[in-house]
Length: 346
Image (cartoon, rainbow, N blue to C red; front, top):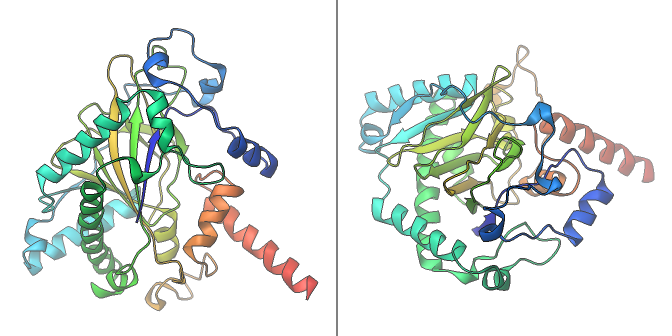
């Protein structure tokens, strides 16, 4: 599993051309959060257009708390109820909260502590762990207590497999189907750090996007800042230390043949307090073919997306397209163009 550690107060990022993406990789924006957090003048790269600027006081999104206690202890009635709630949430917007998840509180606290330790370092120290141009953004994992984050990733992987059982039940394909598909996975952990901003109404911590991965398990600190767009309106998700925020990504949306939603979300910043979060992204093994089970395909529900592998979608979102609500549609068109071009050459 890969571990990314990134400082995330993102500059404006409209849909770029391939050349613009290459230039961004070659000349990444570097800033010192310890200085920028006090500046009244926001660099122009961080200012979003008026129609995309955030409101910090969006109404709270009512999403279900899924109690995993009974499910994890083997109670079939609890499992049925949990799968029902998960299914309802995933048809609406793809977001839900899980509690009584069995993850050690001390492990969560340690993961936040070591993140605090790293991001409190001077910029020159953090840059020693900077990734090379062309690699995923952020810092490499060699700087920190790898055992803590390795343990955290393993705990998240196990939790995600349990959630996959619930997703399988809710879709009517059985508990084992998606668990077995993700049993061996290539997943990513990311440590997100959002410094305070003196003009939070002008910028965003992370711009609107959908996760191209399969499943995201997020642990927020108590500051808040996660917002989700439902029915063209933005809503906030209130942080709860004992709960994880879970959301469906594009890859699982394809696996469900479009029945479950990958929803647009973003992170906002504030004037006073740093916000931090731990994000685990479940991804299939590289050679797994993403294709919905036959139970989800029929005359009433034909195939929406072609077969693909996770590295193919990752390449598309890293090099050709910023992930949004139309990622799978654009990716499908891209695959079809590539196939047509390949057939023309042969």
